Image 1: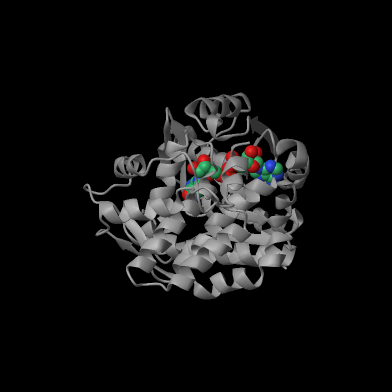
Image 2: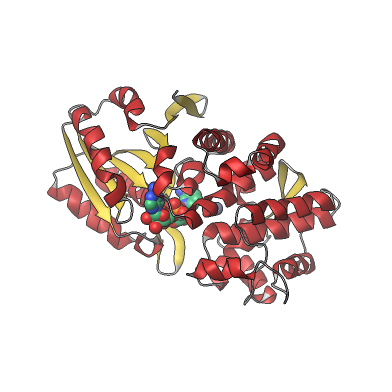
Length: 377
Ligand SMILES: NC(=O)c1ccc[n+]([C@@H]2O[C@H](COP(=O)([O-])OP(=O)(O)OC[C@H]3O[C@@H](n4cnc5c(N)ncnc54)[C@H](O)[C@@H]3O)[C@@H](O)[C@H]2O)c1
Ligand SMILES: [Zn+2]
């Protein structure tokens, strides 16, 4: 059965997110968007294209006038202005005009890049999102942030651009590499920890099913994450306040990501950052020690690292302070008042941060090292 979430802005519905395990179920909805006599460009990447592009093209062909596929090389290094230029070129060659549409069919890289191209080509054309990675389903396809990297800076150039619709078909996850699946689980666990105790408990109860990719549980899990992210984005569409809590684990996580020169996956760094933030929440007497330890256990169960080697805590602190999200020189740290209840704290001291980072530094004799190591492969 298709589930629908309506996304609102200023009390008005702006688009729907539909969930189902078959593309066909989205056809009726797509017809309501009015692209029958329009062109559609499916933007995807070189890993996804061989598995799914033909099926998706076949799905859209009867629903539009003309369908083409633009395949970018996979990977964050191609989330660049150059790839956007190649896409513009492709759209010009295929005579795309203001009324035509793009479909971002891929992970967060494809989604962010396609959204940015849609925001800028001919001063903006429509686009839809069909996320294929767990991270894209629960995070990047919702919220309207788009963009590309520039030089060494992640998401340096971008725009807010809402899609016309998001179609989430969890069946695409079948071909997603396991390590990418766990990468997305870091964000899933984050939603439970910051916003929803009962969802956090759902993850604990259904751990075995999530690990076994049980389609029904996965779909339920993805739906709940989207509901939670939508709630936050609706309240704070342009990131003036509440949306900051989505950065739980990210303040330290981003700094580790940079210091490790992007050898670790984003979700792995966020997992380490969540350990630090949960540790501080415990040390400040807000959550129990058992809750802090349980969060670490949940991360380990989902193959996420809780310690890392080869980082310097002083450097992490410096990197945190140079992050573009710094507001007037105060570091925003997301802490937990309780599991399922996060808030933005601006009083965390350097000493506290250094102590928290110490907790995730790999110590001889711990078992988690291999996880960090395997992530480099
Ligand atoms: N816009 C936002 O709000 C937002 C939020 C979070 C992250 N992001 C961005 O998202 C990006 C990360 O997204 P990601 O983790 O999806 O990375 P990604 O798009 O690089 O996908 C990860 C890998 O999985 C492959 N893949 C994806 N789906 C697949 C499938 N079904 N079958 C086989 N292979 C598949 C991709 O080719 C890639 O190699 C980053 O660039 C990040 O900045 C954006
Ligand atoms: Zn993230």
